[in-house]
Image (tube, rainbow, N blue to C red):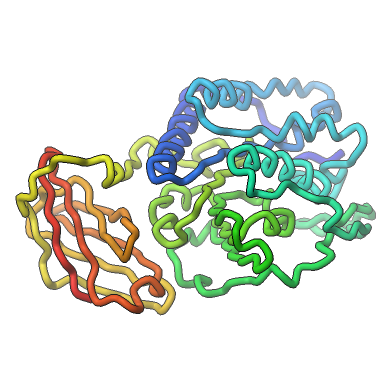
Length: 372
């Protein structure tokens, strides 16, 4: 059994608490906007097949166990796929023995993703559970390792949708959206046969690579963004894709600042929902500088709008019936401007949007019309 490079197991309580609190922050942000949320945590191959670790390696999994307890204490809606994978390994090979030291194989992906879909079905019964009958089962042979190309000869089970004609790949946003250059996986599908199902926005790591086919049937629309740095910009992606559900997925060995930076998770903050405010005074405490910039790449329209003072805490725009969160940015010179990205399609038939600013003391607001 091949494993990735093993190192001494550390136990970082502070990081696990930071990570759990960040997930809670994301969950609260989604729920306050009537978006369902689920966090899914995946085990490593080391956890699932710990009995095959070299003699002398005593892997106790302190960090993951502590994180799971913290998720429960924080009342986070989560699912851990490890128990089902460990239970299944006696009957199925859920990670290839040699081919990939870091990722589950397609059988493991089905078991893990089925666990996630079952939990999502509890949240919304219109989400279909995984159905193995929709797939043709085959066998392929790996002749080399994926990175080193060291020769091997290992068979693995494969699964292909019997009919994928209803799954349409959407390329509208390819190379048009803000995304980390280091973590740039992006996928977007529409299911023409399941139009009444929810739309899901997924932030996922490499366990989901090449495994979209196990999820797309269950949703009307499926958008996947590589997680890590990109999850910090969840408000940006929600503005663009307007999901019904957000799924945040991560693998236990990515729970460190190489992937999810602790300082960024602590410092990031998001707007309160505009709907949470009432009885504010319309004082027009601020206004926009008419030198604002609009950039339309025919998929996403970016607006950068200077404000005349620095008295704004949160900002929003109303586009049609949608309220979108803006980023309120104060520069080194103590000047403020707001930034917002909007799907260009939502602006194609309107001439103006409405901008709302909430004052620093959260007692006043300004409402301003912006011509496009």
